[in-house]
Length: 306
Image 1 (spheres, rainbow, N blue to C red):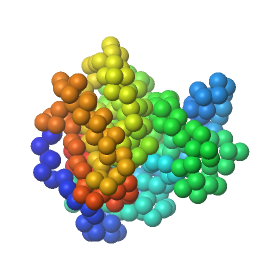
Image 2 (image 1 turned 120 degrees about the horizontal axis):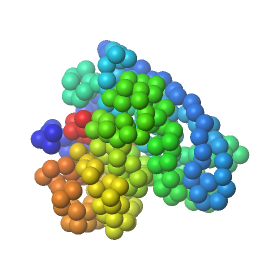
Image 3 (image 1 turned 30 degrees about the horizontal axis):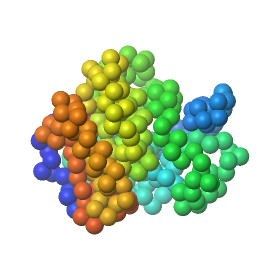
């Protein structure tokens, strides 16, 4: 499982071949749902703040409801929404082409990829009307650091149960907590920037029982002692991660934070995480905080996940 590191791409950009349309194209569907805005409820102390949301789902070419598929939940960063990775955006279309080409070339297994959004504002907050750059302004988005911290509730309560009751994953449409825990080896969670923060703070620290594979692209922004305490608790200590891929770039502002966090984790939790066993740390020369790094990270992740 851990012997494929030599197949990682180590430089950017990813070969342009992967961005081209493939003869065996997957399909994209949209799931719509209603859920609590868990972050707003936590911050404001209010209850029953309900929002209408959607997420995009990539189904591999030849998807067959009689087969079982691994599933990767894939999250955007600041200013992105559900169509950043999968959907009708420039990056969303490229991602689908990369997935199509990887699967056709048998560089990864056919996989379902789910692209939700961690934003859960009420309509009156106007997030959808803002330019992506505006959402970097903490005055315009005072909850910027809170969405990633509470997204785990939506993952557990809404997103995973909806997806895996609708599509043919290893859960076999049985979305009881026990069955989702038993099938965690076929489920991954990855994200970029604040989505990467989400993979650590929500995915690993609150959903270790549901995900065996984690992809953290450009940053962590988590407390190491709290991370260690939670993962060594009775609730999560039996859940080992099969693989934790970490990617960044030499010119990325998040590099120092990400590297420091990972180094501390490797030092303080050597039985749980090791570069020789289940952790990758890939830094792209001249790589910035940008899609051309993140799509290479996704490529590398799918080389070792599942």
